[in-house]
Length: 77
Image (tube, rainbow, N blue to C red):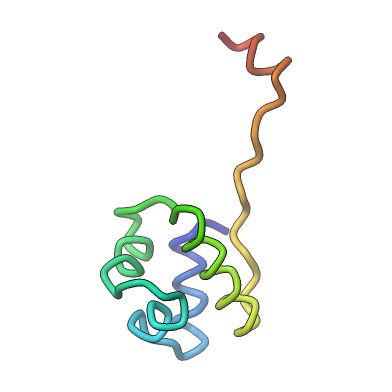
């Protein structure tokens, strides 16, 4: 699940983007940007806040991009 799908899942639980934003402590336009794909992922504390909102409303979390191990990163350069 990507962040835009995560926002859509919260919306399907009956939450508006304004409600999601209020619970996450951000502005509605940020949630809108995530929902539309204009922003691909939130930064730091906002990501954690959105994860808490999702957990509280029974929405599974988006997959977090895992860092590439150093040995693999060197091979691709």
